[in-house]
Length: 183
Image (cartoon, rainbow, N blue to C red; front, side, top):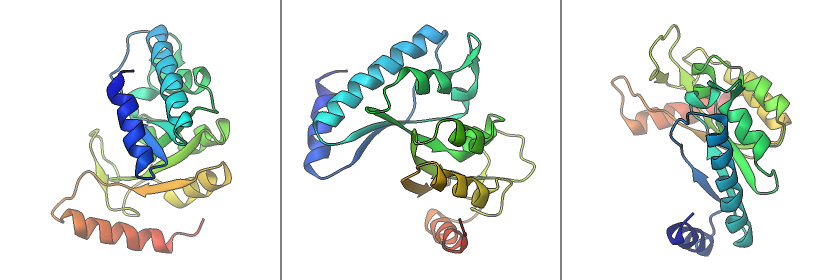
């Protein structure tokens, strides 16, 4: 943590932001390396809390790889203080890693407070295969219901691949899909 982080927290709090989110970290070699990052997350959370904000970490597929017999994501969840650190679950990356978002949401209720709602092209084998919400293979209504029941507070539609449409067309289609989802 450096002066820049404290300055970012101060500036973010001044404009009324509720969260500062770490968007990713590099894959680490050992569980101890992930524990060191968790300690850093706790310190970031303390700084954010003093400013009236929250700190969170956004997962990717590599956070669901085993490191010294444990998932990196699990190390983060167990080694961070839930009074200081929240998590933003990206449904797409959890599924891409071969994991079930609902199981993680149930096991760690109230730790995942934010989410990226992202769908995955049916039958895709490549890592980068997001698509318009509701057209892919992820059972979003089921996951969203579990998320709501387990303490999710903030929902963000996200799409990284557009397949001929542009970002605004995709955003409109994703918003229309979400309006019709019952959870």
